[in-house]
Length: 119
Image 1 (cartoon, rainbow, N blue to C red):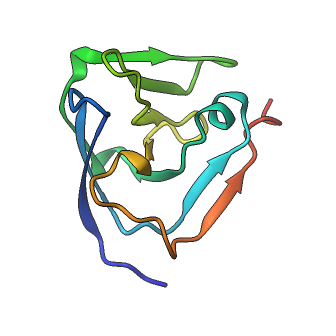
Image 2 (cartoon, rainbow, N blue to C red):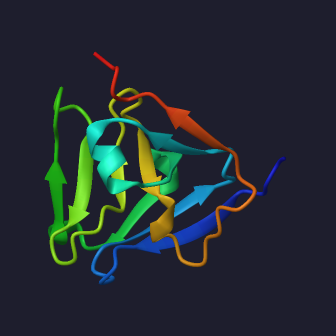
């Protein structure tokens, strides 16, 4: 099902970190790596040109694990995980769709990705 390209606003829980993305939601993804399983995040992948950090850069804290390539960002005030820079496709941002204002994931295909077995 084709969806129109739309701009979505997102934020962490306290609103310190705010961002906008442009996407048509071709799919959502889950990941079975240790960090994603624990976060239980549902992600949409957007090219870095379609991601804009609007506020809160100074409040972001970063976590890297395993190969230290993927960059997971958290709000240092409320602890929410709004997005990460992807390891395999570093010019893309994985956005936690539960941080998007008014977003309902119903009807969008969800693809399970394998992260735990990546070497």
